[in-house]
Image (cartoon, rainbow, N blue to C red; front, top):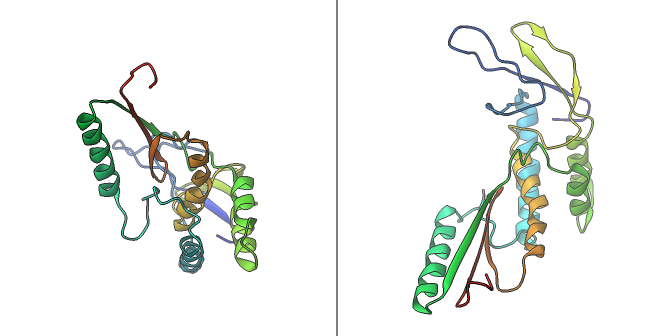
Length: 203
């Protein structure tokens, strides 16, 4: 969606015919942005170019398997199984902690995304993405009625293919905080860390 455009959140219809309206909280239903076909095509083109750049320069961590070609959850399952088997063979204790970030897309730091993009990426591509993120407004549409407009101060646009890769770029830095010797895996906003040792108190 281009700078200055507005989106409408369509509330889900309940069985009794009434509607449940969510303004800025996306708790039980995921808000989907109604954008025109031209914007969707443009977002796809920008996404393909950004993915090519990130993959070519190996910016995305190899353990991130979410929405990447020739990668899937099977890669993480095999790595976890191998990790556990090696722990059994070496008579070690193995511990895995799984994280699922709540409202990850809605709480993504926009300025952090732009900082990561401008770190090595120049030209019109980061300018387009900056316009894609800023000055976003949304409202709720119920039949022919529209609610008041609200500013989207945080997060990336729900329903956009570009938002997935932008979130992936931002969460990419989380691997820098992992201590040496700790195994980890990422699938978009799902994160797991694993560690094994013969001494349980070390874990």
